[in-house]
Picture 1 (cartoon, one colour):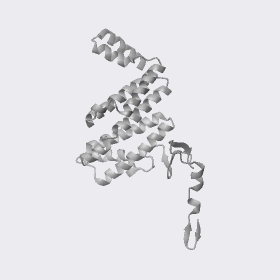
Picture 2 (cartoon, one colour; picture 1 turned 180 degrees about the vertical axis):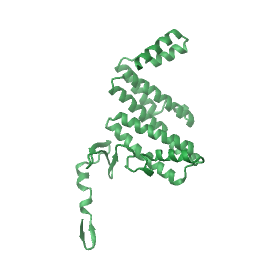
Picture 3 (cartoon, rainbow, N blue to C red; picture 1 turned 90 degrees about the horizontal axis):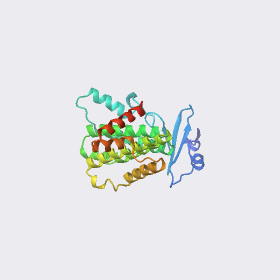
Picture 4 (cartoon, helix red, strand yellow; picture 1 turned 120 degrees about the vertical axis):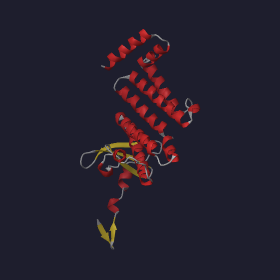
Length: 251
């Protein structure tokens, strides 16, 4: 650094050139996967007022709360050691930070088509939501997070289905969507929104993706769907054969 008149010249630390080389695009999610100076993978997101840089493992900010990979890991350890554990205000603030960080990385993984990683980060967020619901200091704070559960489930379902397509398993993709829709519907019931389920934009998008997969891969009904129909109509011999097929496929 160069000192001028007793002040530090910070001109060499500005981001002017970097921001010019990678302009912000308001109509697109701008994400890239790069290498750090030490060779590790890092994610960068171009946002309106700069660039976010995220680690690809552990917490996106690279911080290790009390030596743990994530805040959730640390809180789970505290819970195991403290019988009357309850979240206090500082813990709630740190939890909110972790929610935001994992959101940014989840959408980045989706944009980069790293679907397995997106599923993993969605699962972390859902586990953190479960922990918050169990140990929340008040109902209002719980609802602040629970109202976003369907959105996280949408991302997870979308990623799981697209991962199955990558693995050339279109029937598994349809099943992933069926499972995701079931979980989202359960959340809508819990929140008292059940009458809005079928008209919800995220639900409609998943249903459209499911029908597109059925058409593209000529999937009339998956084995699980056929099994459910057979049990409902009391065709138990057919159900047994379908279970055998499912067992053989899984082996």
